[in-house]
Image (tube, rainbow, N blue to C red):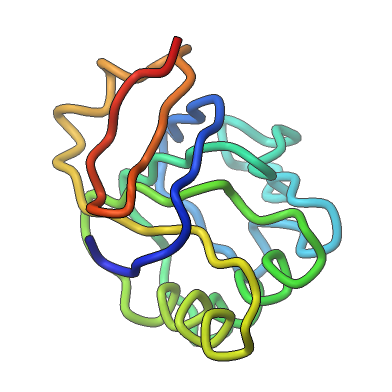
Amino acid sequence: MLVSGAPATGESLILTAPISFWGGVDAKTGRIADVRHPQHGESIAGKVLFLPGTIGSSSASAVLLELVHNGHAPAALVLHEPDAILLLGLIVAREMGWKTPPAVKLDRGRFERFRGKRVTVDVQGTLTVSD
């Protein structure tokens, strides 16, 4: 478990390329805004978001915090590599008393088993496929 949060369930969204939250995700809608990203236009809101990597920006945490605040955040984040700047947005959201999505680490080689599935992340950070 990278950042604890309430148990979460949602459809998986496995990104096929790293993303920058700053400029890459619309903080008002939760849609992937980067026109160069293979999944441009898809919504991350309410999804269990599998991230093969992130493209760093010190503003990524602010974008994620805004997504949490306006109800368009992913249900949970599953990261191949921890991104301290991005995860700071979740930590701040939790400190503000907002419902915070959990974040867990999982090797990207294991992402595919969750493609097209409804996934639950429990309080310990265990991922299971939901029925």
